[in-house]
Structures are given as C-alpha cells and as structure tokens.
Length: 192
Image: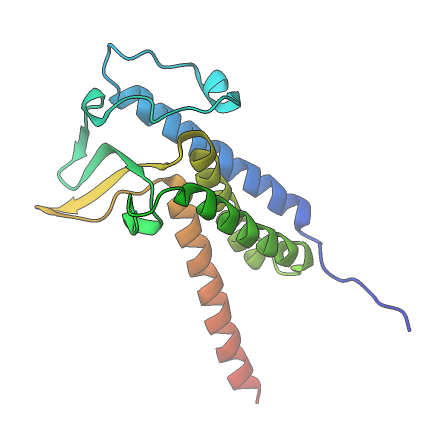
C-alpha cells in the first residue's frame, strides 16, 4: 500500500506570509515606541532592536511615553500586556510570560503542521496569519516579558482594549477559518 502526500502545495508561500507578518508586526511596534517615547529616552534603530538577544526590560516606565491622537476614534498608546488577550490575567501570576510562550509555540507548531498539509490557498493564508501573529507576540514576550499593544479604538469614553498588528492578524486569520468552515458546511448541505 502506497501512501500519497497531497498537501504542502502552498507551504512556502505560507512561510513567506508568516515571515512578513512577523516583520510587519515588529516594525510597527518599534515605530510606535519611537513615535511615542519621550525625547529624553534613547531608542535603538530597528535592526539593532530586532536582533537584540539580550533581555530587554520594558524599556522605560509609562510616564516616558506620550499618546498620539490620530482621529476622534483612534489613538496610539503604549500598553504593556503581561496577560493573555485583552489584558486578562495581567500581573496576577508571576512568570506567566514563560507559560504563554510555551503555549503559543505549541499552538504555532500544530498550526504549522496543518499549514504543511493544507491544499487550499485561503486556509494557508489564514493559518499563516495566525502563526505569524502568534510568533510576533512571542518575540515580545521573550524580549520584554510582555506584549506591546498600541492601537486604541474608542467611541467617546468607551475604549476597546489596545491591540497590535499581530493581534489583528490572528483575529483575521481565525475569522477566515471560521468562514471557510461555515461555507464548507453550507456546500456540503447543498450537495446532499
């Protein structure tokens, strides 16, 4: 009996998307730190910041960052998220960064196996967005022990929790997977 492997057709484009998401996420985080930091705080160039292997603290205190109003409903702010999504479990448990790193890497590995087996372009894109976003946030946790969130949408005094490009990619990728799943079920119902 011969086993045939039909997946992996879009694996290399998926890897390219993952790398692009990570670079875009890290560049926007560096750019916003540079934009919002106090002029008295020294900030490294992007490549030095990206390739630093030494443990970086939270750079400076929150008082060393300004906020930038972009529109009546959008600001750039500096938020260090030590918890999970939307700041849940933030600062309640010591050493959570390590647990979140291991959990994120495990999920990324499982999704990478799925990506390697994927035969659908749209599923490949969705998985690559999720993996790239997860790895972008892992890079923050390794270097800062927290994830840098900076996009602040609000309506009057009601603010959505701050987020970043990696978070956006994860949500978009998950949304695409849900749509593919729902549309696949609808197609299956029509053919039976």
